[in-house]
Length: 527
Image (spheres, rainbow, N blue to C red):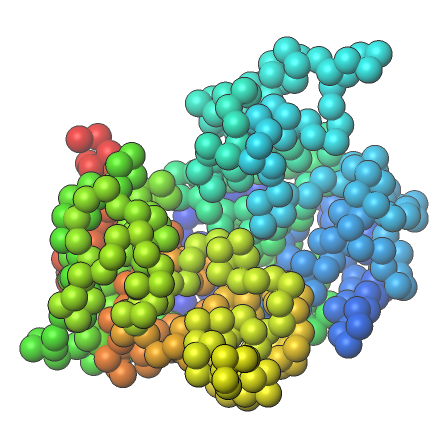
């Protein structure tokens, strides 16, 4: 469970020295330098003089709250955005990164947090997309397949075949393909944006192994993550951004304390802890009852219930069927068997409208593709499930929509606070708040949360923890899925361990720990 002590785990992490090995020689000239980078968008100054230098063979971690400017800086380095002011230097020479091909030509490859693969293409076609292996105009498919196979073996995933269509892979598999694409270039700097977001613990260890191999070969890695323990383990040096500015750079990753990092990121002390709350009343009524639920190929014979004011956590590895269970309860997938009841009434299988009408809300794992209409304004995304409340004579009252949305914007401290701003322009953490705001307006009896803190900074994470506790205290039945087992245990009253599509164990959250969950998962996988 996450410690209540903000100073906990200061110093070298229990897992040992950083996975990236020894920091690069301090005398080594930077391979990549960023000097005074400024980038302004209409109504917002995203970068306001950012400085950064990255040495050969080091893992340089970039930290900051959502909205601090990390994503914009990544897009500058990848050639997706051209800065208004400032300089990017490679090997001490200024370079112009006007387009992504410029960045690749200078040896800068980027792995984005939001998966950038093309589902309709094969693995090999995705790996070499944009720099196809060709001779006199003819694509060398066999050569591409062979090199893709070698890359997958290097990444520890030989089971991912070059001719497999990417759309058939899990989110974790797609992340591996994205990583292979970055490695397929002759990269000298690889930017990794939240690379472990969709990986389970074993895959994270494998990623750290790959990072260590890259840095040992002299490749520099710019590593972005909100998981402070992970950064302390893999990183050599740190740079912290706040409000588009560099507030600290060159900090040693192994010895800079968590409390100091949080203070730099937020400008204040934030207790990175899950708030304690009273247990639900033992005689509270059952709000959600799932019986014998099954989805062929994903999970089978799943049964559980959730009482008013109770939080139930689903713990397990990526691909265990956790997300599919939530989606089937919500009606986004049509189960092949079983029953879902809310307040004692059975829901029509595979009907989202029936679930929403019964008071069920879902914050999905892929918030951009499944939870938001990115080009619609903030206010419309918030009122999406409650149009009946903001309609007059069959027509939407936009003034009323904005008023309803503004209440949630203020309550959740959504930033920027402009209700007319397109949803796609918000940071990851604020997009997550936006999805939550929709269901708060709706007034859910049951709230299903799939990876609610993925890609969310420590400040927003604490706010989401407090929101879950507040909703439970008000009588909402909550089901939460997270790849961070300590988060599931910390938030939940009861924990269901899911392995290979089956619930293999159930226990009160205070009677199970991370090691037991992993043992149960391994046993279930071997069964």
